[in-house]
Length: 399
Image 1 (tube, one colour):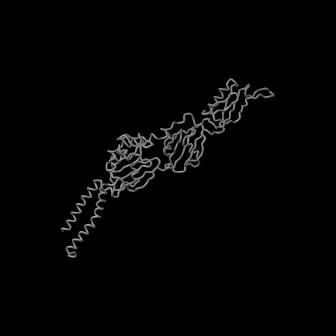
Image 2 (cartoon, rainbow, N blue to C red):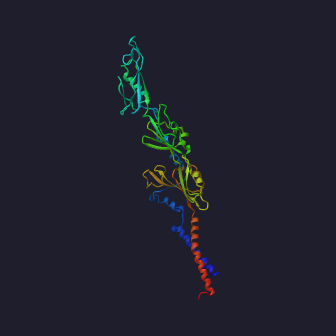
């Protein structure tokens, strides 16, 4: 009994020591899937030193992030086409026709027998708009036409001929359109250059001209490149919201991208994996569900974190950001306490972004159990050996 009491006392002493070592932070050598909740919580008091912002997931934070998403739709970045979709430009081929009311002297044709002039139109040869955006018309001279519509070119020629010809009538025809075009590439049936018309074609119109898309709509992004700006919006949003189905302009490049978004989940979650999601996006609640939730036997429900980079003006930071990337973003850790019911309501509207990392920390009790198992595996052989020595000594096997 004395030996058993000694072993029990020794084990109790080792247990106390192990707990002290574990909670003093000296048990970092234990197996772990990542940082503990207490480690990440330190960012809250050392944001200036680490450069990482620690933000609690709340309804107000989720609402602010949703508002930020609205700022990056097509309608908030690009303006609508103001004058129509077709303008004359260098490289275009046009043909000018002029009628003159009889008795005309400038363009009318006089019958050699009757001597009566007829209203036969004067059809000038087709000509290409030069690099300076100019065409030439007899008796009207060199006319700058670049950036003008066909109607505007007709009016300009009329103004120059009025007074020279007898009540002239002018018609300009676009024989070949090479400048008022939109390029459609990517995951479409046929990449092509789409000529524009005065109809003012929209994004979906030029996609239809290219034969439509090759993948399900929910997995596609529509990228618009215009005047040095490049931006992408889920194709499904462009289809559902007419305000996002912008009128295209000459020189636009429309690219259909098959780029499924994804987030990564690590730690004490139901599964550690990279999970793809729709281009239209999902919420934090949906992301956790697709990852299998949290592991009820290992997870610290108060320590669920989301890592991402946010634009510098995305939120009101608790501390002035000290680390800003070249893309003008800030490293942020969003913290969730799943023991608080209010967190679940906030998570239902909190938007997940492409390349987000969700980490579920391990509960302190699990770390303690690991440490106790380690101590037990070390002390059990020693206690067993001590017991054997006592037995041999009492039996007189050793002198």
